[in-house]
Image (tube, rainbow, N blue to C red):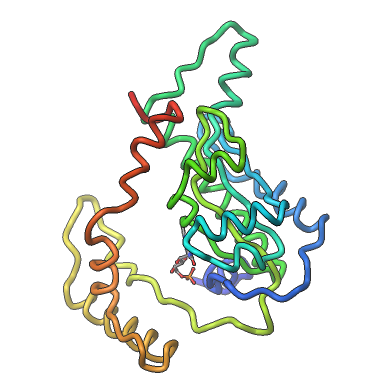
Length: 249
Ligand SMILES: Cc1cc2nc3c(=O)[nH]c(=O)nc-3n(C[C@H](O)[C@H](O)[C@H](O)COP(=O)(O)O)c2cc1C
């Protein structure tokens, strides 16, 4: 099979970018990326998402701090926050005397998936134009504060942010290899992963970290992700989401 086309090469060349040059993303280019990315598939044509472009520099600074002191939120040309948005449909339906019940887990999933598909299109479209970026889940460290800053109404929640900008010089590091396909691809039924394949992957990731950090980090992938998932994982999110009137049914 010939998989040597530009789009497949682009998908494969993705790396998160966290160091940006001073060059701003041109207004027209940004709007082009953001509008064309809307052609992502969307569940039942509902388009249950919005995106906030954070221009206010004080807010950028506060968000950078709230997200765990991620400085690149301030230095990137653009910082976007993707919202699962059930508020818009609530308002629209009132015109038809329909009171939309937004609290269903299903609606929460639908809106989150819609926004995520859109965001992935945005980062790919940006990368196709030489712009780099990184998703910022760190905004969920402090969702209530972020909501206040962004004046979010009920039935909306911030899923993640995204920095976009022209990469500083050619900062493209070696790419982070993903799991072997045969670990994530299963046929017909769920099956457990092949331990040998995983061990081979572990060795490759360990080498990647040793090289990238000059020997300071030598975690395998399994070690790293096990530690990452140990203990609490933003337990405040449950209450926050429910307070927004989402995912409570
Ligand atoms: C939903 C989501 C949230 C993320 N949040 C952060 C973040 O807060 N800070 C950060 O530096 N990277 C963040 N990342 C980037 C991941 O760390 C990165 O995609 C992963 O390590 C793989 O590296 P790569 O994108 O360079 O291939 C996030 C990625 C996703 C998809």
